[in-house]
Image 1 (cartoon, rainbow, N blue to C red):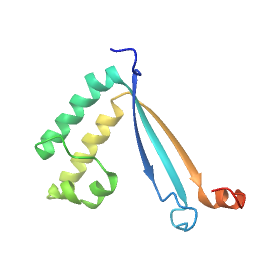
Image 2: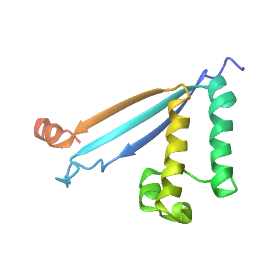
Image 3: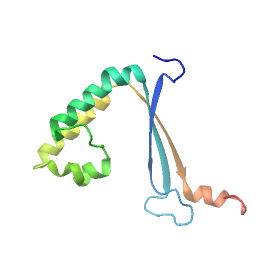
Image 4: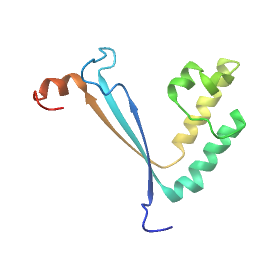
Length: 123
């Protein structure tokens, strides 16, 4: 592996709205989550398992696994013809996640607390 690059690959996702101007009282947080993989493990274990799952269910591996779309059966996830089909997919995905090594790091910002501590001239 080329040493001018890191041995890790990081995937980042967010949840919630970052704005402090309008805070949703039902979801008053902003979350950043990081999945950190050793590249070698990712290439040899994660990618093949994830591709197999995607090929088995969708016939290709371009599907992006968004929780909201999976739960609401939107977009590519409208393929489930029964609750048991969807449960089987979710169980296989959960098993895949449980059987690969990665670091999960998350940061949760409680927006009410942050906005109450901000100085007037702080953007």
